[in-house]
Length: 102
Image (cartoon, rainbow, N blue to C red; front, top):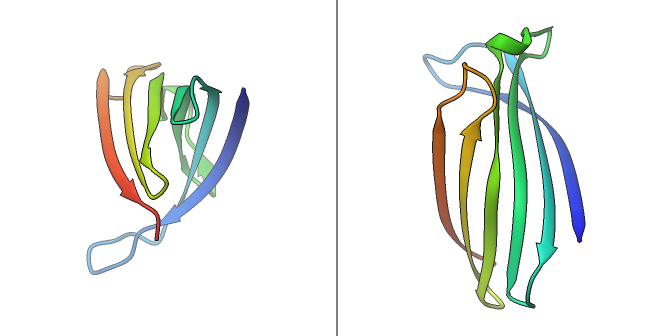
């Protein structure tokens, strides 16, 4: 088993972007089922602007299972299904990524 917690700040840029710095939090609890497969539980939260953290009902919170499958040492497939914890988040979010280490 292993876990990870991350606090992230993001800032958009470009012509139509605002100047706000936004805060996010993520957490992961993972179990390595085989050398190639990890089974996970994840939580994603978008908390709002850094200078004004939004109230709970204005934040986006999602929670759900995911997996990482290493195809070979350089290629990994990630998939997940996140469900809403509060009314502000989408009911369900499906995620699928294929990544290659350089």
